[in-house]
Length: 79
Image (tube, rainbow, N blue to C red; front, side):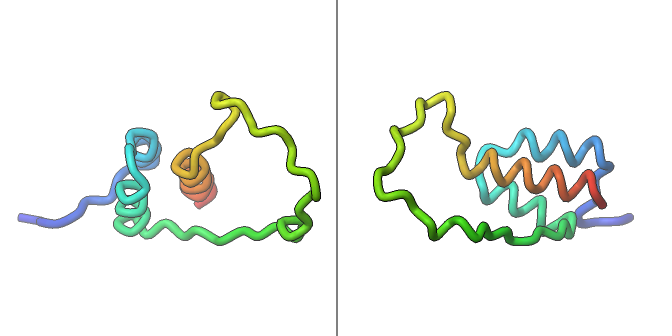
């Protein structure tokens, strides 16, 4: 009898990523599935404008969880 975590198929994994309600759930999947993520940096990040633009409308805001989900899904699809 086998015990422990059973790796998911690609389809199951993408569905599980979409179902995540928190960053901790998402990182648990990343850890168990051994998904490799790379940090990104943008050289223009330190070039902040003097006059900040108008704040985005609520429907335009992309949450950190949604951005992480997109990065994890891209990593899954490219492995």
